[in-house]
Length: 319
Picture (cartoon, rainbow, N blue to C red):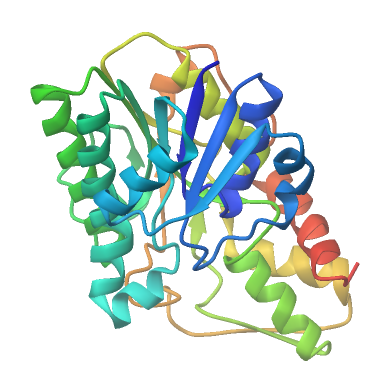
């Protein structure tokens, strides 16, 4: 049986990917340091021996290798989702992204080389592009000038993977994620707004002036796209993943949260066009390359946001 290793598999996207892999007939070993991840949703899978879990610091190649040996499995592919997902935290302390976003990549590649694992599927980000002020970004758009430490370390990871493909790695897929929404949510604008409105039901305060706009993809669509890309031929492939639209504004997201939870609440926007240092306020994706392979998102940005608002509100026991 093929055993897939999912690094960062206890996180938001990882949990959804793990379930899809198991449902597709694969045995999975999840390694995660549990800094943000949770394992509660894995209960039945762990009990049925369809899933193995080890708490591991994925930035340490020796510890990672020891965990795989102890599990007694042969890994045939790695899905690398281990990273710092809190961009503001990485701005405050750059070592967070160095360790959790780049050194995880370096260590995972070390492990793969020593173990002879032939395939890597890597979760990168739109943050690698930087701020191109609303230009539709294709995979070849440049220059790549990330404005957050998170984006810088994702770009460095992509470069390290490309060098590995040149030297020894038989196959690598690079997924450049947009903003991904759904459950189990651990961070992100929708969760932040839902929690803010729960604390002050009459007033919803929003970072930035609400004009920030980006593509939003539901996690169900994201996982489907990742599995689709993993099934394509090619030694080193890079894909923007996103919906086929121009995105959703923060204003529309705030209004969706308000309308669902507290229709009479006042929305108070800030004055800056950017929510925080390192935030790209306007981002659009060109997904022509992915569409040419026959895949397209089921939900638009607006539809993904509306579904996620309902799901996250239920997660927080608010609606």
